[in-house]
Image (cartoon, helix red, strand yellow):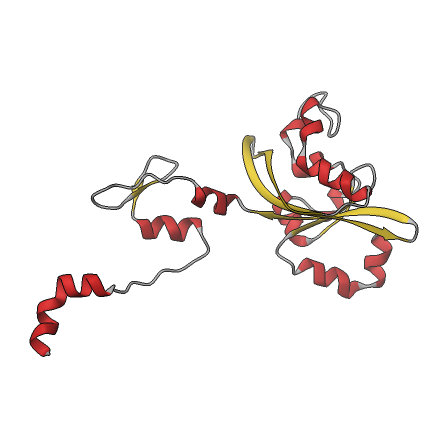
Length: 198
C-alpha cells in the first residue's frame, strides 16, 4: 500500500482532502493506511497508526487496558467495524452501516456514532479492506428528543443548561442562522402598520 501511495502522490493528496475517515486494513485487521481526516479523528500521527489493530488505533474501550486485545474480547464478536472489514475480505460491500463505537479519549469513555462503508480491494495479489467512516454523532444527537420550554422555547442541553434555540443549533451543527419574520407574525405584530399604508 505504501508503494502505491509513493508512486502516485496525487492519489495520497486526493485521499487527504476527503473529509471522511478513510482506512485501509490488511487481513489481520491492521491499519496499512489512513488519510489525514482519520489521523485527526484518532488524534495521532499516521506513522504511529500503521500495522496496529483497528481497536488499538481507534482507542476502542475493548482494546484498552491490561490483557485486552482488539479481536480477542467477548465484545469483539459483535463489533460492527470488525464485521464489515471481514465481509470485505469475503468480497462483500457494506454501505452506510451504523456503528456506535465506545472509545477512550482523554481518560474518558465516549460513544462515537459512525456511518461506515467497507469495500474489498485487490492489488498485486494482495487483499485489503477499504473502510470509509463518517462521524454522525451530531446528527444523531439532533434526532433525539430535545426538552424545550413550552413558554419561552429555550432548549435544555446535555449539561442541564437552558439556552436559546439559535444557540443550540449553531453550537451543534455547522450552520449559521439569520432572522426573518414569517407572514403570520408580520400580520400579528405589525398588521396595523401595513393596514394603514394600504
